[in-house]
Structures are given as C-alpha cells and as structure tokens.
Amino acid sequence: MKLTIAIIAMAALAAVGFSSCKTAKKTTEACQHLRDTKWELEALNSKPIDTNTFITHPFIVFQEDGTFSGNLGCNTYFGSYYNKKDKLQLEYSGATKRLCPVMDMERDYLNALKKDISSFSIDGNILILYAGKEEVFRFKDGGKMTEEE
Image 1 (tube, one colour):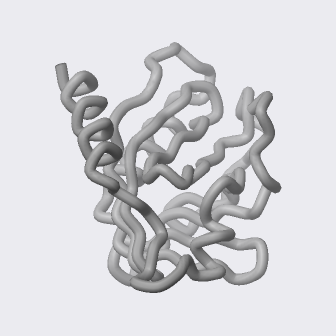
Image 2: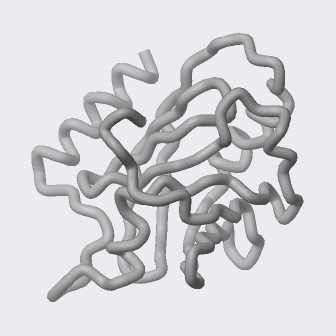
C-alpha cells in the first residue's frame, strides 16, 4: 500500500511540473553534475566501505525528473528528491527485498537513506550528502549512466 501511495505521489509531482536542481534562472553546474551520474558509494556514516563484499558496487543516480534510484549492493532502491542550489531533500520510496549475502550493509545504507538529508557538496569527483552537518554518504563519480545500467 505504501509503495502504491509513493508511486501515485511521484506521478502527481511530475504532472504538476516538479523539477529538481533548478534555480530561478538556470540550472547550476553542481546540479548538472549531480544528475545522470552514477555515484558509487565510498563511505557510509563517515566510515569507508569494503566494496569486495558486494555483488554490485552500491550506487545512486539522480534523474532529471526528480527521482533517484540505485543499488544497495544486491537490492535496488528508489525514491524522489528535491534540490535547489546546495539544498537537497530525499524521499525514500522503496527497495526490492531479495535475500543477499551482505544484509547488514544494505540495512545500514537504507537507515542512512531515511535520515533527514538536507544538503550536498560536490568537490571534483566526490559527492557528499549531509544530514545537518553530519556526513552521511560519500560517493565518487562513476561516470554517466548507460542504457544497460
């Protein structure tokens, strides 16, 4: 039921012109880099992750339509976001529920995703998401998304 409501809400936002990463006049350079880039997880809650334990390297992608999606290492997840300049709000909607070998890490990632993410910074090829002043996620630029991903 929650998933259905989330999908309806996302569709309604898209129908009324919900847009992400917009300023009054133009899209900023940081916002351009934020969208359609495969951001690969490097650290969670300020702790580096061991990428050798995952089936797929965890990542997130912010689409131009105000949605995000990614992979937790095994399961996929999705939601919506709103961004203006360096402010960012994430609304987690759901994830697949496969039993995976690294469930602890996936649980920690989802719990972090549900925090009140309020801002971001991009420095070169590093994206950091913050809850207040606390670093929650650190990603590196994994390149532009391809049709196969």
